[in-house]
Amino acid sequence: MKLLIVDDEPLARKRLTRLVEDIGTARIVGEAGDGNEALALIRQLQPDVLLLDIAMPGLDGLATARELQAGNQSPRIIFTTAYEQYALTAFEVDAVDYLLKPVKATRLQAALEKARTLLVAPSGKSRYISARVQDELVRVPLAEVLCLMADQKYVKVRHSKGRLLIHQSLKELEKEFPDELIRIHRSALVPVDRLEALVKDGNGKLQVRIRGSQELLEVSRRHAPAVRALMKTE
Image 1 (cartoon, rainbow, N blue to C red):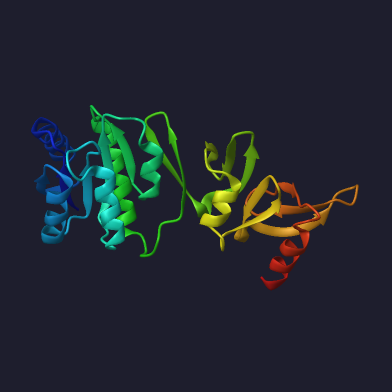
Image 2 (tube, rainbow, N blue to C red):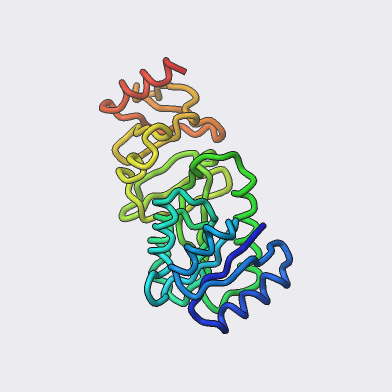
């Protein structure tokens, strides 16, 4: 796995180099001190992964990541930064992880392993629900999601390994995953492939059984026709 380190501070690049070499799962192919230099080296060296600082003179890390997205270039990005406030923005450029300086060896090793997993995965856009938990970027594959429930200012993601609170609204998630999620209630979305069966409770209210949990969730009258129509086509 080829890796490019991008940071305007030589000492930071040196420390990251030492950590990567100690971990031993990636080969460093170059270093860059700013975004423009990084873009030139990416075209030349074709790295698999970037360790990318955010606050740099000229083209900063986020702008660099957006340039890569616009150009359909595909190195995986691990942000390494001293600033916490850009974590949510990092989701927009599909970052693998978001590491706060001083970067810990264990966190870097985990991030590199995430990147390796994504590199060997089938091609196509990665489908994840993402959130920042403490100093870690947590990504839940959409295939593991059971349902998404509105919870005051947050959305509660129930998945096969637990629960996660995210800041995205149900409306935003509906727009992001229009083919994968269906609204069953004003406060609930369910992955289409989790719809197992429609049943009625003792009061005649319509419910849907969720595949993988046997949980029953209420289906509102407003959304019942769309849910019924979708399940008939499967």
